[in-house]
Image 1 (cartoon, protein in one colour):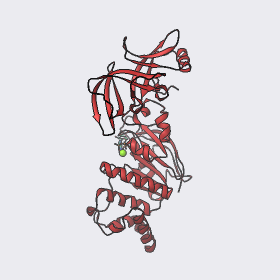
Image 2 (tube, protein in one colour):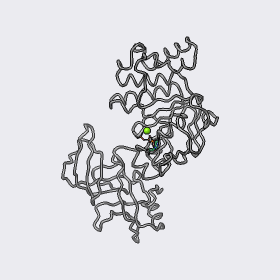
Image 3 (cartoon, rainbow, N blue to C red):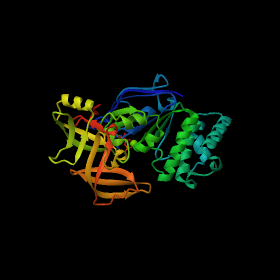
Image 4 (spheres, rainbow, N blue to C red):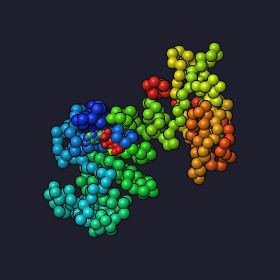
Length: 369
Ligand SMILES: Nc1ncnc2c1ncn2[C@@H]1O[C@H](COP(=O)(O)OP(=O)(O)OP(=O)(O)O)[C@@H](O)[C@H]1O
Ligand SMILES: [Mg+2]
């Protein structure tokens, strides 16, 4: 096993205006499971392909297991790559697909046999070893692709959206299998996905990338509780965090926040300490963020967020329901218990305690602590 360190890793494709990856710095510890997440086109695959040695590095350094590998060919980097498309050979059996790479390397036959058997056992493929890929389900094919990586016993596993071709149920199941596999092998894994739920559930640490730039690197809990900026706050969590532009009112007594309209239905009451901080600041506006799961119906008697809103749409999900409501022409989403008696067209109060409310600079989008 090995650690991976990326230093100022940059990729500029010729003909493109902006770099696809811009000065990425990332340390992945030995045995760690790190997810690279971000919207489509943000540079995730580009990063992975450079680490794998399939793409030239424009500038920066890639270190695997303490050695700079920039000039090392892919096959000497001791990595295994699992693609979104399983890329299995259709004319080879499961066993032959799994052993193909080892045969190329002239690994002794007995050793190959042993590696395939052991991987097949771990991935529950023992009964399928003689089949061809066409005779397998999508989930089984994906396991074969994992098996092919596993037999190589690499220092680092690199995976590019390996679950995106699976249906929702199978994705959840395979997600758990990969997490288990990681615990079992204690292997270093770098896993690319655009699905923040996948990242949140599997990763030790998550790197959020946007437009080729690293926005934040931290544990799932850190990213959820303390997003560095509005991008990360909106990307992590589902449904997304609500954002409301608000005005800072510096009254004689204390500072409070209201929506932008004169007779606003949205307000935030602050603690004395926050009140003092904002009194000394010179901005007149602020962006307030509240997660749908932190909103409750009704008022709260301590400091926090509250909005009087009109219910527009209710999405029933069994245990919960998602309420889409409007207040001062701002859309708010709240997750309420499905037993609530809220109906479409109702005027309701949505509140959240202050310790769940986030504040962002309206210009830079940075978190205000
Ligand atoms: N060979 C290439 N030549 C020129 N531009 C490229 C090339 N490959 C990727 N790009 C550009 O680099 C940017 C990042 O692409 P990349 O494939 O890394 O995105 P991604 O984050 O993996 O997206 P997705 O989630 O859709 O897979 C994109 O704007 C893409 O158009
Ligand atoms: Mg990609």
